[in-house]
Image (cartoon, rainbow, N blue to C red; front, side, top):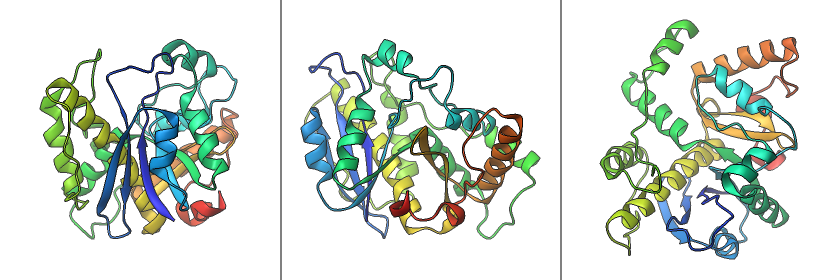
Length: 275
């Protein structure tokens, strides 16, 4: 199964938006094998291809017709991981539709496994791991939460349609510390448009990193929150993140706030092929 990350340009209201989607593939030995810039749905499907893949996208793959937050967002909030509250009405209002769900349905029909990932969370986890001494015992969850709150990913994503190029190099460096990026793509466009494209690639590669950790382990390198019915979000994680997620899922279930199963660690979820 191939590890693929998809940055999806979600706006369904225009075909000529300056921002593009990006599809990134990472090999089992954590090398970037290629990135494809896309616009139309058909281009995205072609870039993913037909070989069995775990595709993690930075857009909602499931949009239930409910009010408020999905179960996954309730849990993420208690993990201090900001996430856009997903409802059909909100997606229609902000993005003009649910393109991610449409793409996910098409990919699933081709035999791929599709879930969501959060590029900022992936970058934060990589930053967290970089500052930790290898082999260090897991932290007390209270101390972990305090330190986790201080980890912030670089601001590289466009705001108001304009690129923020100052954050691109720091974000790229975080990925280059764990991924072989000899195939990082050149950008045909210039100026702000090139910066927009690179931000899309950073998002796609971040999602692909989460997919590679999910597929190739170790089993305490990722976690998943939610399910295929209400929306599953895959996190790059470590023992502290997994422990904290399990504690909060159990508490939220006891309160009746969420209904997802209590399991979150890879060892209890099973491989993505079984999702």
